[in-house]
Image (tube, rainbow, N blue to C red; front, top):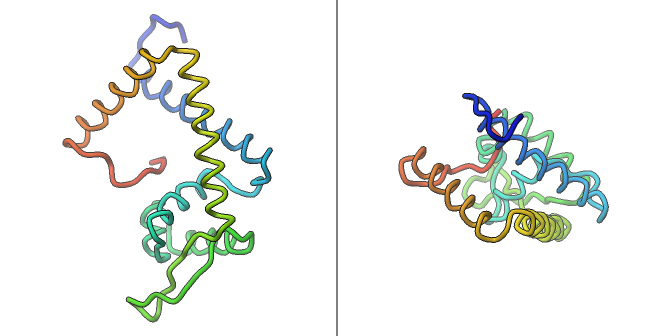
Length: 157
């Protein structure tokens, strides 16, 4: 894509490529520090759980998947020590999924890696341009969502 060209799908493509680049670099760095068994979808689950836990129905809704798919993913994460399940005091038939120390360690490494990647982009673009990019993206997101941020942070495809 040429810098001066513009098509109706170029912006979406560029935003998806930027996000994909960040996710790929994040995944590579996580592998380097011992988290070779986590995937991007797990990060969206960890993000939800970081607010105090959730049940399988809430996780499925957050991810936009079936309860069965969420249950399979949770089994995978539990076997690898990222999550644990506790009885739900609100509903005896349900369990609350919580992050373990390993889950929190993964979040801490993710935050450090993303900070490093953002710093690299900031150094490349310059602080003023990077700040303006963030301001513009925030503005576009708020405008498209009636003045608020979307409730979920997950891919919609």
